[in-house]
Length: 409
Ligand code: CTP
Image 1 (cartoon, rainbow, N blue to C red):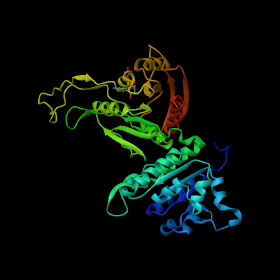
Image 2 (cartoon, rainbow, N blue to C red):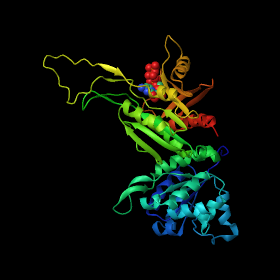
Image 3 (cartoon, protein in one colour):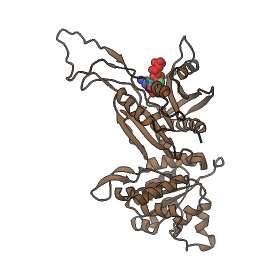
C-alpha cells in the first residue's frame, strides 16, 4: 500500500506493435488521475509513436536505452523506484525477453529490477499468441506473479480478425489501478480457476416475450474483472448483460436459468471458487409457444402457468463437485416480520449450504444498475464482514479477499 497522499509512480513500458498508439490513451488516464508516469518505449515502439508524444503526454523525458544519463544509473533506478510497471502493448518479443530475463534495453532492464507488481497487456497476431513459445512464456510470467492479461478478440492489424487485440485502454487502466491499490499482493489468485455468474435470466413465453428481472450484471462483471486482475483464470457465465466482455475473461453467454444451470454445473467441476452473482429466474412458463401469442378478440388474457426452475446455487452447494472449492451466493433481502436482513441472510446461507453469502439490504432502494453497492459477507464459519458503501469494483475485491483467505494453499 502507498503512503497516504503519495503520487503512485508508474512505469509505462511500450513495445513495438501498432497498438502503441492506444498506449497514449492509457498514459493520459494515468496522468489525469494523478499518477507520476515514466514512459519507457522500446526502439521498435518509437517507430510507431515518437518520443515527443510520450514526453509531452507524460511531462517527462523519454528514453529507450541505458546509455542516456548513465550517471543516474537509469537501468536500475527506473525499476527500483516504480510502484507499478505496465507494459502495453506487450509484444511476443518483450514477453519472451521478460520470461527469460534478457535485458538489452531500458524496458527489459526495468522489468528485471522492478520489485513492484507488473502488468502485461499483450497485443499480437493470433498465431503469435497461440504459438507454444508464447504460451510457455506467458505461463512462466504468470507463475512468477506477473499479471498477463488475455488479449481481446477482434480486428487485427491486417484484414484478419481473431484473438490478439490490445485490451481496451480503459480496461487496462482499471485493472492496473486495482493492482496498484492492493500493492504487491495483487496476484493472490494466480493459478486459481474461478467461475462467476452475472446478469438476469430470461424465461421465454414465445419467440418475442420473456419474464426477466432488473439485474444489470455490474456486480458480477466487477467480480470477474477483479479476479482476473488478481491473476485468476476466470470464466463468466453471463445472462443478458449489456456490458463489454472484460479483458482476460472467458465469457459464456446464456439466456435462461436452465442454460445457466448447465453451464455452471459443467464449469464448477474445475473451479476453486464459484460466485453466483446472477439473478436466475426462479420460475419459467410451463410451455414456450412456438409462435407469438396473439390477443384474443373477446378481450380475455391468457393464463400463465409457471413451473419452478432449478436452484443452481443449492445444487452445486450440495453436490460439492470439488470438496475444497469455495461456493459463494448472493442475497437481496429487505427484512420482514419473520426476521431482520441479517437473520434472513443467515437462514438463506444455511438453506443454500454455501460457504459465503453476500447480503444486500435492498429495503432503502434497489442496487440494480447502480455503480455502487454496500454488502455484508456472511460466512458459514460464523463470520460477518461489513463492506461499506462504495464502487462495485471495491465490493468485488472485498469479496475476493474473503474467498482468497479461505482457499486451501
Ligand atoms: N440462485 C440460483 N438459482 C436460482 C435462484 C437463485 O442459483 N434459481 C442463486 C442466486 O444466484 C443467488 C442466490 O441463489 O446467489 C440467492 O438468490 P435468491 O433469489 O435470494 O434466492 P431464492 O432461492 O430465490 O431465495 P428465497 O427463498 O428468498 O426466494
